[in-house]
Length: 121
Image 1 (cartoon, rainbow, N blue to C red):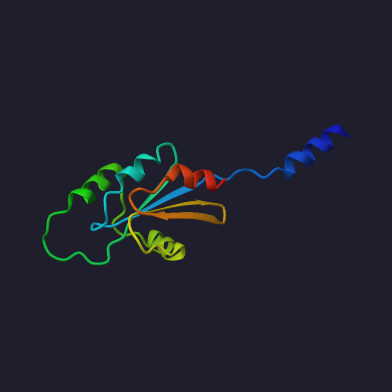
Image 2: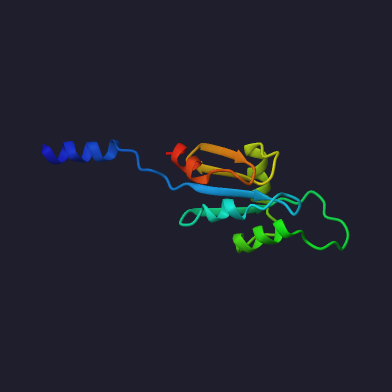
């Protein structure tokens, strides 16, 4: 009987889902490398949003810093675009912590990722 009670308790205990940290930026947005530095050890998904990019201009310093901090970035990212629409991303850079069906979103290069992670638990 004890084993049955322990099994019932274990089954009723919700398992904490791993959070995904989505970081949205563009060639024209302020530097998002500070946001990316705060995501060490987390599952991170970077999304490059480009509305229009005309001409042969050189990439801006903040964009290059963000790319360097991000590492791998998809050039064509339909899933990232869908997630940006779903979350209502309007200002860049932006960060969203998604866990289960809940999302916590902040915009601006000073966003506190650790606070968003705490809120999402």
